[in-house]
Amino acid sequence: MTHYDAIVIGTGQAGPSLAVRLAEAGRKVAVIERKRFGGTCVNTGCIPTKALVASARAAWVARNAAAWGVETGGPVRVDMRKVKARKDGIVGQFRQGLSDRLRNTPGCDIHLGHARLEGPHSVRVNERRLEAPLIFLNVGGRAAAPPIPGLDSAVPLNNSSMMEVDFLPERLIILGGGYIACEFAQMYRRFGSEVTIVERDSRLLSREDPDVSDAVREMFEAEGIRVLTGAGIRRVSRPAVVETSTGTVSGSHLLAALGRVPNTHDLGLETAGIEADSQGFIKVDDRLRTTAPGVYALGECNGHGAFTHTAYNDYEIAAANLLDGENRRISDRIPAYAIYTDPPLGRAGMTETQARASGRPVLMAKWPMTRVGRAVEKGETRGFLKLLVDAETGMIAGASLLGVECDEVVHSILDVMYARAPYTAISRAMHIHPTVSELIPTALQNLKPLEVAATR
Image (tube, rainbow, N blue to C red; front, side, top):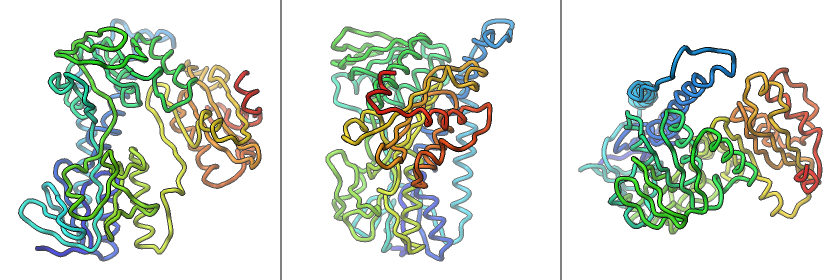
C-alpha cells in the first residue's frame, strides 16, 4: 500500500493541471492513466479533429481557388496518408508534452494501468493499492452505442476509430446530426467522399435555433452532402446499409456519431459510495464534490459539459477552492462553445428558443454576414450574427454567431457577459476595421423586440 495526499485518475484536461498544481503546493500526488495521456481532447477529439478540419479546408480552398482569381493548374488530390501523418504528428507533440510535464514534476508519481475504487479513499491499479484523503476522477467519456438492431455486428467507425483511417471512404454514411457528425460530414466531403447524414430529429444540430440548423443544412447541401432528417434508424447491416423510417441508405463505410457516455462503468463507484445518474454521469455539487467525502469528479464524467474548456474550468474551480481559499462554483460559468463547421458557430449564453421560453422581455439583433465587409473581402459570406439582450437589465443574454472567424468573435460577447456589463459596453466600443468583430457593436445598435426582430 502506498499513501498519497491526492490521487488523480485520468489525464484529460482537468487532471494533469490539477496534479501539477497540487504537487507544486507540496502535496504528494499519484496520477493514474490506463491508456494515452491527454484524454479525448488530445487523442481523439479537439486536437486531431481540428487538424483534419484544417486539411479539409485547404482542399476546399484549393478546389475553389478560381473564385479568388487563383489558378491551381489541375485537379486537387488529397493524400489521406499524409493528412493522417500530419494529424498524428500534432497529436504526438501534445501527448508527449503532457507526459513530460507530469513526469518532470517533483512530487508527482505516474501509475500506468486501470484504476478501480476499493473505498472512498482507496484505489487499486494493477497489483498496487493506493490511498489518499483526496481523489479526483477525470475519466472522460466515449462514443455511445445505442441498442440499434445490427449496430454492434456492423462494427461502425466512431470518433475514436476514425483517427486511424488513412484512406478515403468512397460513400460515408454518418448516423447522427450533432456537432461531431456535422464536423466529420463536411470534413470528409471536402476530402472527396460522398457523404450522407442520417438524423432522426427533424433538423441538424437540434439543440441550436432553427435558423442555425437551416443555415448549416443549406451550407452542407451546397457542398454536396446529402442530409436526411426525420429518419429514425430501424436496423443496420454490414457493410454500411441503414434501414430508416424513410427508406434504406447504402454506403461503403459507416460512422456512428450518436452521443457520448461517461467512462464510469468500471470504476467501482458503488464501492466508494459515489452516486451516478441513470446515464452513468457522476453526481456532483456546485463545487464538484461527489457523494463520497474527499472525492471529486472533473470533466466529461460529471455531466456538466463535454468540452475541453469546461473540463479545464473544473480544474480551476477545484484548485481555487482547495488551495486558494476561494468559493468558485460550476454555476458561475456561462454556457459557451463552438462548432467547427466551416464557417464555424460560436455560441454563448441563451439561444433564441431558450430566451422565448424564459418569458422575459428580450431584444434581438440579427445581422447577415453578407453585410460584414471582412466576410465579403474574404469571399465567405455564409451565416449571420444573432445577439440577444435582456430588455429589463440591458445585459447580454446570448449569442449565436455563424460565420467566418465566429469561433473567435464570440469571445468579445462572452467577456462582456462575464464582466456583468450592459450591452452598451460593447455597442459603444470602437472596433478595428476591417474585421468581423467590428459588426458586433453595429448589430447591437439595431436591437429590436424579439418578435419584431424575428420578422425582419
